[in-house]
Length: 134
View 1 (cartoon, one colour):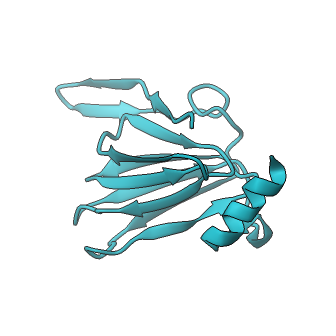
View 2 (view 1 turned 60 degrees about the horizontal axis):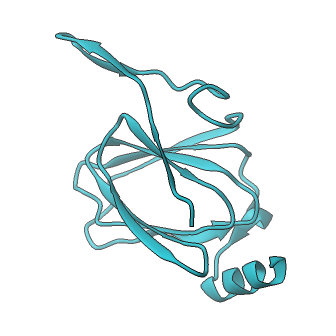
View 3 (view 1 turned 180 degrees about the vertical axis):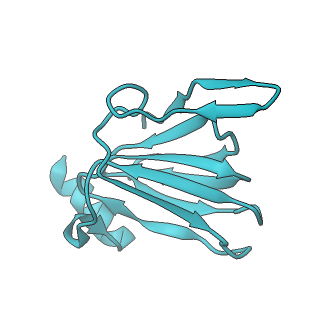
């Protein structure tokens, strides 16, 4: 499974830091939706789904969390804890987020508007979909 972390250019001086997000420049798709997760309780897993077509870039704005990514053949777990780095998630990849720090704010950029039919919410269905697509 190819996992791509995108290093975002950080600008700063003694006043602080700034990262600009620009579609088709450092974000490799047109941005149609932006959302963020915060206040996630300890021990809670988020995500627990895959998408049929959606592309996303996840950036931890504050704190940290872990991602479990699964393409049906391989699973990778990684820690996001750098606000100047984005995790590109292509489809179809099963994703779960967990081990949220108390102060975690996770920003997600998506290339499509919300569309329920793009979600695969059952792991068994995910395995069927990727097998059928092979």
